[in-house]
Length: 146
Image (cartoon, rainbow, N blue to C red; front, side):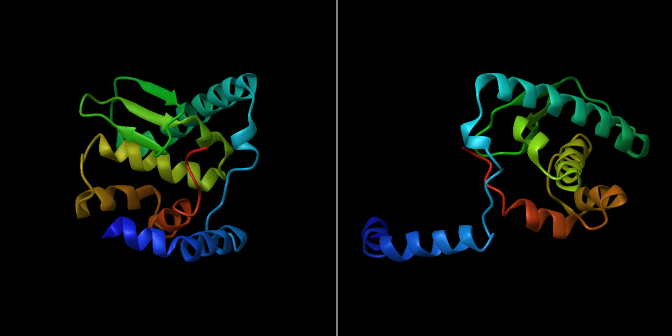
């Protein structure tokens, strides 16, 4: 039934996606899909520098500890935090505006204390990113994958 509906509405869906892209509702990171291996490697190094610096900055407030930081080419996520205390970030974080990168970094850092999206978690995020709701909404307008 779902496949039938998608098939029937295919043109409408594609049209709405194109309008959303054109109007800026979905943003591709500039030139991210066409990056060379060398550019990706440079972006990964820059992402790691940014993340280490910003975690050190924000951790003055949180005083949390982690095991390792990894930079990856994730297709669907900007970041993640494992139960073992490992922080993972998409290398494309280096291509975002700094205030959105900060939101992602703080979001994952706070998962070290709260492995959920409870009120306690969002209260932690709000300690350093009081406008997290607006940033969260904006980051969702960016496409993560290629």
